[in-house]
Image (tube, helix red, strand yellow):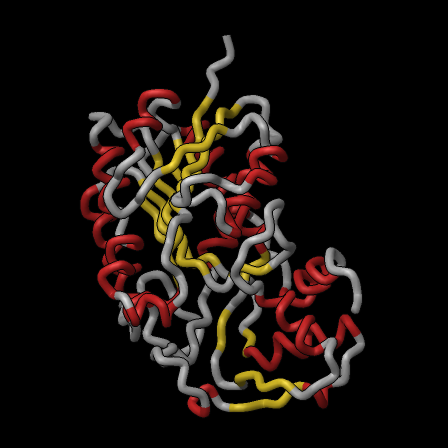
Length: 318
């Protein structure tokens, strides 16, 4: 009889979670489940992925994990996508940010199985870095400038100090096509396309830099880590910068969208991030060295130019 493996996606109704579930559900050798915070998960998602089990779980308290144990069992791999990820919201409610982003209940639940048979893949952020230089390496000191980054550093510390097998992915901005059940939050490329299509001048920052990663590259990374764990089963303790190959500002991101759509560059007004009060400190340059990611995957992630092109091909022109 085939030895089926179990994958649990915590926060599976979010942007990355949905893309990951859509990809994993194509495998006939995996049993897949998701957790969601709201009472009822999106029906569109459940209809599209009928083989995926869903469980309501409060990651802050751990309520609901016992139901996962009872009807799904111990997962071979847990991918933690659950997060309070809007920096300003984290700043306004730091207690909620810490409770949500530091996965104490998840780690406690997994340790409760009494063995080291689960791999935890945890989504962290590039905002753990201070932002005072370019191309941060994984070994560089984490000096976050806001509550969001601090909560993610606390999560990394908790996992690395208490859990046996883990991969921490320090993710940059994740962009790409919309999800099966459209997410409520604004997606970066879609938003830029929408505002530029109106033909009015729009402000974009020229002095904040990131390495945005195409969502399918992030899914491929998680899938590759999952396959490595399932096939090898060897101790795994990794921290990986999960970004794309290009260091870009918001101005450069907008110009890439404009180039593909044929919008005038004159619509893109270049302004300093310091000219806007966002109610939260934001690191200036958290571009990342992705050598470790490239070595693991054996290939370079999608260029920003190509990722934008692929994303816009899924959106009708205005």
